[in-house]
Length: 386
Image 1 (tube, rainbow, N blue to C red):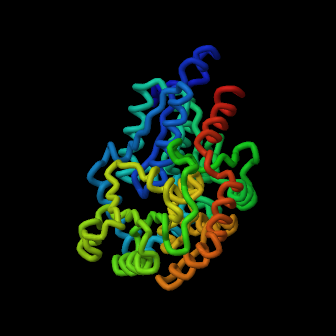
Image 2 (cartoon, helix red, strand yellow; image 1 turned 60 degrees about the vertical axis):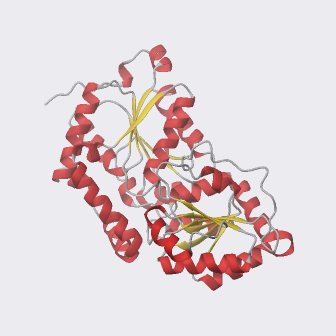
């Protein structure tokens, strides 16, 4: 069976320079995959490229996708240990053998039709499943368009990301690149440490003041992923210890419940429900992010130079992000409300020297420019060297 899939390699070099049509394949499990794809689209469009994001599996089987998305979110919220087991199982699974499953096969048909009807010069996957679909199409002679994988895990990189035959695999840090090379024996030329792609609005805030020990000027962004009782204990404890501080609470679907538990009257609490609204400005103004060690949030914190206090690391998937923060001296692990309060107090004492050290560590790590470095790596590999 043949397909009329377009290949950038058949275009004249002049045309390739003028028209760089890129398709990004992502999926709505968590925020990291979509956030990385959106940041890459923003960077590409800023360079005059044409880029868009698609999720063929969700488009082909919307009901099935919503069901699996709900299961994923339930595990993240209520059964993190179960997700840890599932993540380990994913690491041991041969994803190339799953392409015949009904939901995945439907997504693959959708992807074939999409590539047949559009001119695409490069495909970038921020979710690994799509790279295996492209592997299969390439092996059967159905596809000659180049493609790459952008990994959204740090340090503890799941094998699903790298067992693909993609010519280029972009990783969020040099340590992850070296680990993947050593563990899987992947050729050096296929691996590139580019950083995690973050949107341009996530930048350091020059006007951010040094907070006082009494909480004067202190601002915190708190991701409400832990149990609601723990969230409320943390927020109440901080507001009692530093009465002049301000908390932006990332409540999302828990907003109504948390409002009922914490009350609406306290003007020191701002509820942030998401819904497409960017967290960039609250994070830029914050002195700490407290919450889950999701890849998108951790690297957005790096980009804004906002120290991270992790109180909810997802087993397996997010442990590498936490390790990166601890190794850099850019964050800390928090296991209780008492530990949160004592850690913040320590970081704020003596003119907040501990907090300033963390900010400096984030600045020196230079982990906040991943989108530009990723696009530059793609351009060098697929538009300059073929």
